Length: 119
Length: 485
Image (cartoon, rainbow over all chains, first blue to last red; front, side):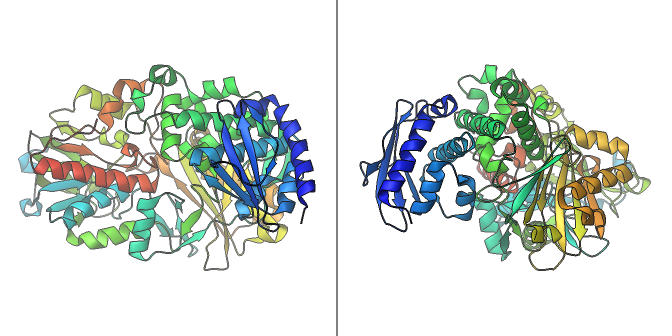
């Protein structure tokens, strides 16, 4: 189980890497979205925004109407943000779930894999 | 049309409202839809079995094998409904463990969709797949030729697109493997517009390439052909097998289909076939539930409109040999492997665990596709089998060299299919001739998975295409206007 501080720290690192990766910023061109994260173990909500090809800070709590809802354990989110976990593995096993339109889910899936591979 | 004097047994002739040519999934779905509404329907198929590109057979050593289409995935609702109706269970494709990537002389293990031995290349590939899929979703499913930039997209091949948008050679090779497995054709054979349409119809390239959550997610316990057999059982004596159609005479409101009644699965040129009795089925409407290339081999009188025939000439079948290697057990699972292989440049570029869910033996299924299929046809079965086993041994170890049995289904040599898994379209064909794909010609209607707008090329698309053609016929029989294009 990861604390909220640990998760925010891991995300901040992931965000810096992602916003500086041209391949990733190209993948979110024209894709402004609100993404909610929900941890299954600590039952904590977070909100991330994609705006103008940049990822926002991770806000604590659910804000706004989400386009995609990502659910998983705090530990898995931390590992994913640190780049230690292949997100594909967790999607396939159903330990991390993505809820949203087909195209949005497809985009998140691709973005998270590219972030992992480029980390 | 055969001369009258050639026809020995006139009492074989049938009269009905609708004749359906082809008893694959599409033709049977069309006929069943019509029969349930009380329309007098006759179905003809050249073979002595139903199912078309779905073909489940017990091998010489006694193993039940799907030699053709075999998978069902999420959103294939027509197929799922049919399986539920027939009481045919599905089970997940085995995905537990790691896949094997064979590249040059190296062997890597990977998890997920894309081999990750070259992370930079894999990231390049995933980004490209996303952009391809996003472009695909902009192509209208019912009329891809009406896409905003249709002419530009149809003037280039998928290969041109991939060569332009990928910087990594390893990603380019992996995507080529996926394309060949999906289409039975290399990216240089495919119009970019056609590819985008096809990807859209199946929910995107990522979806088509996936097992879990995608097109290869589940299989049918007992094989996919059962669903065709179930539909045929409902149709009963309306289905005539061993009746290859040779010619079609038609007027504004009538059609006469001539077939030979062939006593065995003789090739079209065998004396048993050429000497067989000719029968005629006279109907008000006909549905041709077969790939365009096969339609183009029938003799129509009067000849089909130029654009319809040109379309049949310009939608060739892909080329695929489906190979099963059967073992006494799925031994690779004990080594933590899921049975999947991605091997760019090898003879069997992609493979999956195809073991049954209810028996102890193991099976690997692999695809020799596109130009590899054509090249290996020339090499012959012994060379094919040796190459396949050598590759399986590289992936799974020396035990793979000694299967109980190797079973090949070389679809291009099948006289009543001539390739597979699907018909493809080279540049220029869709924009020039696409509307002829479904547009009826007088009393003639076109079904088959190639005419589907959802899951085109798949079993699910075959079903919806059959029902769509049947609905067209129902409108026509009521004197209502017909034609969606």
